[in-house]
Length: 219
Length: 313
Image: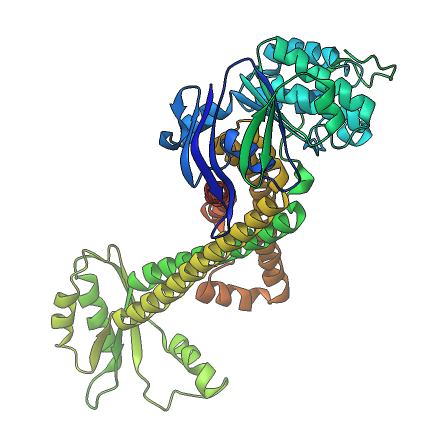
């Protein structure tokens, strides 16, 4: 499903942030992506989200070389990938329901066609009572659950999470990762970037460890 | 999981109102842009109205002047003026395309000289040139050359077709119309530039929305459409304010011109400069500026947004 061959990345004329990445991730797996701050976790996620192109090497997603794809094909592929950020990135003027429904709305689907699904998903992540609340009145945990719901409403094949537990307390962190694990059980491939050791230790998922731009795998 | 929360529900989804706009109204520098577009539309409307007024007056002048010719008969020693006048009138009336010819009376001729010589002056002792006013039925069919040839028989007679005046008038009106159109073009260019800068500012301040839309899979077309919708509304709003202000301006100037200038002088000014009445076509012209400005706003913002998105995505 995901294959990196000799991938390198640099910003402008700066040094290589990622060097010679070679790995393969099978569908339906759950991986932690970890490493010290500045090791390139976010850059790697951006490569996976197709918002950055590698400066060398080849990234293959869903069996296709992404460097050969045009803008439209990239857009279509991006719709199969969900992303969750540490800072939630919900739109402040939209309600929880509207934020979660946004990926379907941008596809031009009428609200009547997705209303029940969005409501059901929000119930599932524990936000059934907060459909019409604006992000400003949601707690950090609620915001992150709304962000996760938004990332999975389009039934993505891959779900990327960049430090999704960075702004919530340890107990809620565990609950959120359990939520990701539930999604993984349903078949979604998950790559969750975190540098919180207690989380890594609490779950038996394999780890991709980035250090000084290079990656090693550990169980 | 799921986590149970005992929090009040704000509203049932069964009663959901229409989904909120993805680009919130307040996030676009709306009021400033509405005001700017209103001013630009007003200036466009006033310029267009001015051009219409001048053109209408010029056409009316040219048509009036073109329907009339003047035969001037200078006093010549040994010639009887009244006889020459009768001959000139008869020759004119016999010319094809002439509707009527009439010699101005001595009193009328004296009145014409009053502005230069003053009133109450007895001109009976002086031989003054006399005029025959020739009205044409159809300027295109009038045989002016024949009349000119025939008048050679009348000593001291000359024919003035007013061609030089008409030419001068047309050049002047043409210059004013061309200047107006140039000003209109510059206003449009300035409007486009202002919208480009406003759109860039809006995109920069809404970068978060653009980024979120990008990573959830929105196409550049969709994002551009969302912003274009906002700008189209602003363009229409500003355009309507500016267009109505321009119409009001012409209405007020028309009323003011009618009440400030005495009626008699007003009539003379009306003959010379037109009546400050735009007419239905002029009003429609100004109103047509509104959708043009709105469309210009939407198209310009869409192109600017697309360029921004191409650079950032």
